[in-house]
Structure formats: C-alpha cells, structure tokens
Length: 199
Image (cartoon, rainbow, N blue to C red):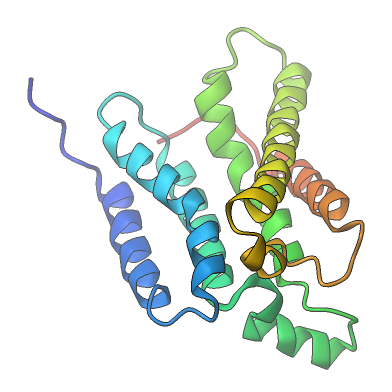
C-alpha cells in the first residue's frame, strides 16, 4: 500500500518548523533545560509525521500546532524566563517578571483547542455544541495539568540541577495554577472562533 503524499500545508509546516527548530538548537542558553523542554518536541513532531497516513488533521489544525510549537521552541532556546521579547515587554510595561511563559500557556489553549477537538471528538459523535465545547476545554485543562505534573517530575527526578530554569516559576508560588488557568482562558477564547471541521 502506497503512502498518500503529504499535503502542501502540512509539508510547509514541517519545513518551517524544522528550520526554526534547527536554528534554535544552536547554542541554547541552558542546554540541560533545552533538552528537558524539547522532550515535548521529540515526542510530538515524529508522532504527527508517522501517523499522517492514518489520521490527518485539518490544514488549520496543522498551522495552529506549528505556531504553538514555534513559540515553545523559542522559549526552550532562551529558557522561558529569559526570552528577549518577554524582557522587552517587562521593561516597557513596568511588569514584575518576564511573562513569555504565560503567553505560551495561554497560546496552548488558544492554538491547541482545535487540534485536540479533531483528534478526540472528530465530528462530535452526535454530541451537542455545548457538550463538544465543554469536552474541548476539558481536554485542554487535562493536558495543561498533565504538563505541569510532567514539569515537576522532570525537574525533581530527571535533572534537579536544571529544575529552576525548566520550571521558570520566577519566584511565583502560584505559577503552575496561573499557567493552567491561562490555558483554559485561551481555550475559551478559541471557542469563539470554532466552526465545523474543514480541511
């Protein structure tokens, strides 16, 4: 059985992502933190490529996932608390910290709601719009919580020395809760732009 050719949009997403990832892999600020942050990339991107012939997301979903992964790649290169754009915004707006990580957690909800909806719910399986919306946001909340738990385990078990840079809490004891809340808010905003799946 021949493999179907990859579509133009997914192919462009792979090419753009690969170029940016390769550039950001050169001399990251903290190599240990970079490796921990890229565990997500090492698991997600090959899975998307290897399963393309069996399950295809819409072109919109591929673009949304790529944008999110690019934001993540930039954060992993600098460490989230030291991304230059976040430092600029902190200084320009008189903020108490670099909020780039907050932007990425919000973006996870905003940009991954559609891909998760397509993966888990497909066409909705006969569910009403309220149930589909609820389950879509619940998926984001569950994955956000799972990521926070993974961060904690990786920082405390895999590499305690890289833990502070990896977690990027910047002294905020409620960092994990705020990150999860922002992911849910991003998902709620994404619901405003939802429509039936299209390629």
